[in-house]
Image (tube, each protein chain N blue to C red):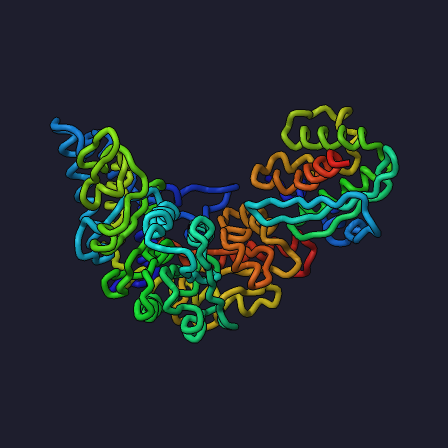
Length: 142
Length: 413
């Protein structure tokens, strides 16, 4: 496995200085996500205005992959419709599971495409998908 | 006397799995607290059992069943001698340490009444916590924990404060799978017995590395797993004093553990069959016996000595690196070959993935000891754990992989 293809500059940057790691004032939804086998632990906060995800942020601790994946996801979903966010989650998870390989179809994931190579590291897949599963659970509650 | 280097070279070659390359690098296996590897002798013993012996022990008059029964019985005798039990009926084969402790939580748990207390330590593996937690819920018991001091060890004063006349069960690990602390189980058992408690020792990290004498410790019960001492997975041991095993009710019931079965009631087989319902893992027991032969051929004292040297060597080097935070006692006395640590600014999962690309197998996470991690205020740690087939050269390779992780994460060399 090529480390550079996983620990990319983008991922390292999001891990180190995530602008999305903060607390929202009065979030509409707060959802806790946890990988019991490894201890990665995040809390995702969302502000919802009608059909739109107005703002999102997270807190928690975990490896670089889980932290960067969460931060990149937040950049992607902010300002999106809830229905779009569901679609993005499904596309991301399908990418990591190697169910979608088509670049055209993946393009909508933007920066999150940088996490594609995690699909070659079976032991780390759960780190990458934690926040996306958490988002899905959060949106179901809306 | 053979030199250390000879010891390393001599034994590593007995392990086929350790000869392979990972990512083009020699495999350096440092996850022995999770599971150990098998020498050819263990692989051969299991293979031979399946090729020439296999049948259902205790169940047939034909020659194979007789041979299988003999092999299974001999394995029990081997385990009895390994931990110096008084009688071979005191050796119950289970699946693993976890099942052994669950057996106790159900069967020994029957002797407890509402309001009774169980004392554990916070350094226990989940397998020595949750069975007791569930028992406490079922029977409305009180669960208490012993906490360590600054040096990660449990002060005797803590023991005296928590273990009282109300304590019915005291269960503690012989060696922590996170900090490597070796508990003074003999002294602890003596005090707990004075208060009238039953003493359970979790020997999962102890039996493979420390010469253990259950009579000298005066353990009422002692549990361990074969796969952490070169044996197969799926076979473990519960030792219990004969009088106590006779006193407590059976755990799993069904074939093999009965005497007479009537429509509405049954009587049970004597020890050890009373606790071994269903067809046993005979090939596993045979593998465990071969593992014991192999370990005793080297000698537990020699194994302990070699692992202490490795631990001392690794700790000395790791202490000099200011980017490493260690989670374990400074004092090498009563400390086993397990080292938990963190690299500043690098999560242990990332470290484990990067080390893997260098062929190094180490563990990351909470090590099935969440209450301890929480108490130590750690989210996760990396962990290396040694066995006698590891070498100083491998520790050097591990240390180089730390440097690589630092480079990947943009820290200077």
